[in-house]
Image 1 (cartoon, rainbow, N blue to C red):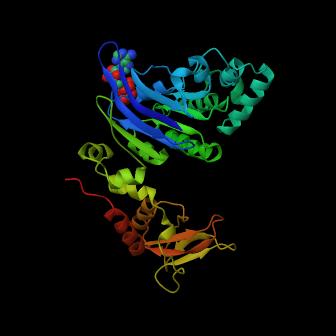
Image 2 (cartoon, rainbow, N blue to C red; image 1 turned 90 degrees about the vertical axis):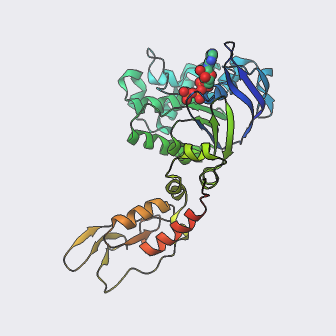
Image 3 (spheres, helix red, strand yellow; image 1 turned 45 degrees about the vertical axis):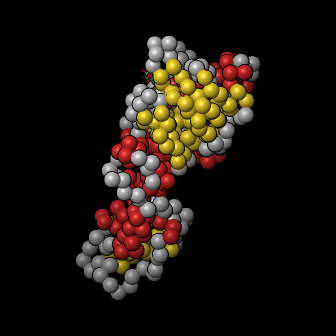
Length: 344
Ligand SMILES: Nc1ncnc2c1ncn2[C@@H]1O[C@H](COP(=O)(O)OP(=O)(O)OP(=O)(O)O)[C@@H](O)[C@H]1O
């Protein structure tokens, strides 16, 4: 766990970057820091590994006051990922990843073997290890940045806009990878972003800051979307916060019934019971089956887009479990939406 207790940061030029911050970042969880430009997110992050020293207050990592630890040692025990990866241009990818284990005194052989493992963990081919950073795409460089931060297996990862410089498709892939990795590794992650959708997707809790380094609200994404503390937070979340909330709710509770028989549309299955397509008397339309884990937003989208108005539901093997109607989905979406507090 990372604990901020009454932390204040005032730079020598008089700028207050962080104002009286008290905040807990739970162990094994992702805390996302969001807020307008210059509101103190990066300063907050950098105080954790002492790249910036607080003016007053206490920061504890795993119960230990960071100012009582050797700064270099502390930094090596905390993974740090920044925008555009910040890789060493004249070192191969493998040597970039091996940097911290080497600094910690591991043999070159062992550090490289670990780096090769990590390449695979972050979804890169072994050949990438021999290349130099400029020979990789932006998204691949970010993966190397994540691998480098994980190399010494630190319990804490600090990520400052790590996916800010890549296109939206690659960004979504990198977010998926991070969620997958986090499922396995359960690191304590502090993640700075400008992108509220990214925050909602990745955060176990989201801390919203406003200019002057004031924390306005810290809550799990669903609570934040349903009950923003004030107009500032509501504006920051945007007009579509109801839809964002639906992206967090799953299809699991929406009732399902048997596939229709003898009506306008029939669902055609393969021999294993997996949906192939919808068929009517004179046409066929593709089917996009959803699982219980898919979001209510995807279901709503699908129910609007599909001419059948029905959603085919499948289990993890892709076998049909039933269908849900547009009405069922709308009713559930309406209930979730009713949780959204209206801010005047
Ligand atoms: N070394 C410094 N000296 C003086 N002022 C600084 C220094 N570093 C940051 N600041 C100021 O502190 C405030 C907070 O900066 P910080 O970088 O933490 O904000 P941020 O929320 O991360 O911003 P952005 O979203 O634009 O990256 C800003 O007003 C910034 O100009």
